[in-house]
Image 1 (cartoon, rainbow, N blue to C red):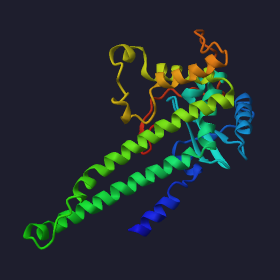
Image 2 (image 1 turned 90 degrees about the horizontal axis):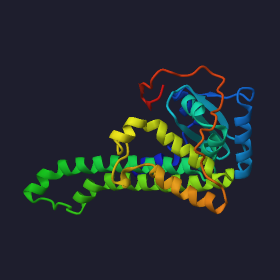
Image 3 (image 1 turned 45 degrees about the horizontal axis):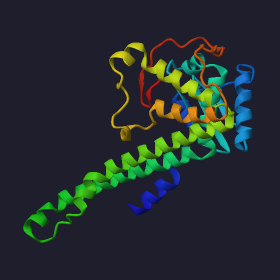
Length: 274
């Protein structure tokens, strides 16, 4: 079992980027399709000191999302159709800077490793619980002593592991925001993108009638920090830089060369996407 755990820790974080992108139906964006956006990616990758510029992929989904896969020397960033249509070029630069920060700091590998540790913890908890059940007749007859310290460990280890994973994810998100502000030299752009994503994803009536919906309380149960906290940190940066911050005027969204995806997301093995 120890050998299996070591092998899992060694190989499981190294998932092929192409396999992940295929799961989401992503396809690479050509330079002729969105040259301005690809130029932004190249400029941010150069500032980040990456050996290779991450490839940019389009995901045909109406959801507003972006994610990165791969290693610093071989990475890809995927943007959904909904995100490309909702954000301006300045806001997309902030989002891309955030993802490139994850790539530069190897957060993808780190979170993959944390996920593997969590899975191993749950597997070993299940194995230990099975041993306890099998050994109950021996302990009941007095032929063996019950390891009482093992019982609370089996009960709480998976939950503690999940809480530690969520705390790590929130910390890396905060750091990626600050790093993206340095890469773009425009913290107000990322702040504007975060505010817009919060507004689009929750909707007007949901904000009025269900302000806490989809935001687990307490905050230790969130994988991402609350948007207001992220924006507050960015505000302190653009205040120091003398920027005015996000404008009340709606900036023009980017022009997508593809037909709009209007179908609602459907349940897939990898979640609600397209």
